[in-house]
Image (cartoon, rainbow, N blue to C red):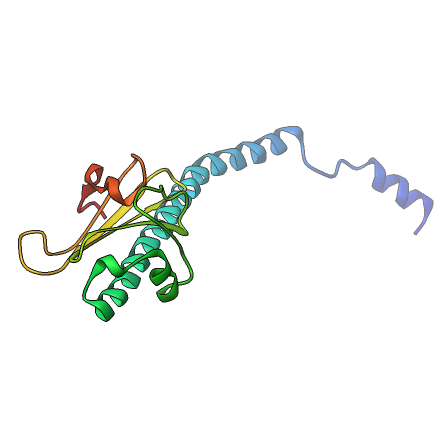
Length: 160
């Protein structure tokens, strides 16, 4: 390669203009403005899903204990941890603080309530009642109030 070709090459105007670069930056900004809310919404839904799954796992563990004893009051924190060790369980007077901690309450032999706090700011409740009557079955609900199983009356049931 000769000296002359190097000089000619350096004198050419190769590259992008400032206007072209500004257009690219503007397009990237618009794409980020569209994508960021969608990403944050997906994150919130994932946090809520983890909390709902924790509540459902707590109820499954309680049903295992109920099958063995025919009594939900036997579903103590120790019994639940033996049935489902992936979660931490606290009693009804203690609030759940995250998706891996479930507040549990068994107000009578036929009723079990669990509450799990989502990082998005919602407390998810699940209540199961066996026997006969109008409230028999599993009911789900959520609230932004205090996340203790004993506070399930504040929940809007049937919302998840």
